[in-house]
Length: 148
Image (cartoon, rainbow, N blue to C red; front, side):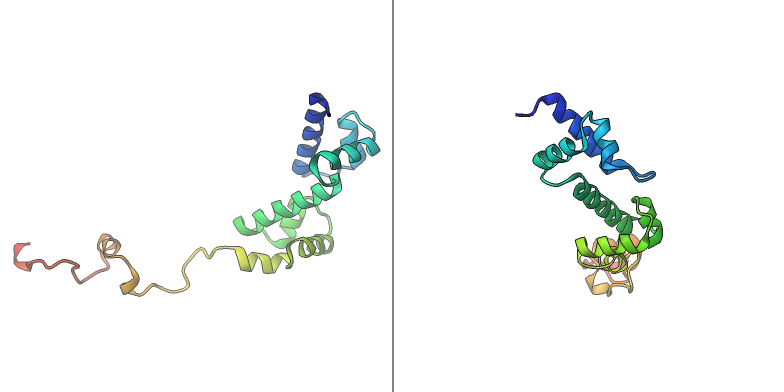
């Protein structure tokens, strides 16, 4: 059984791997922040989290890149740099391997369109919305026009 304080240090190391955006950080440096040797750190990390620190870091970078591709207008290169890669080729290769498509195709496939490509036919717009927007010239109710 792992001591709670050791588990806490490993969780902090995992968070550091996930959140580190600056210059590349080595596994040895992360292990040192946990007070462990590199070998012991990698062995415990894999036993607790089910993947090596490197695998975890790569997965976290790709997940963050997916968020940025969907939610921002950053270029692919800017996304690459934002998640900690210095090579667009390495980023694209890893992204394609993990996601099954290149970053540009992922963005086209998963990013919601911000504006509709065409207007909906009036028959598909609920009457209450048509009235609120002043779109409908027809009344949805049988009203005596002379009462108004």
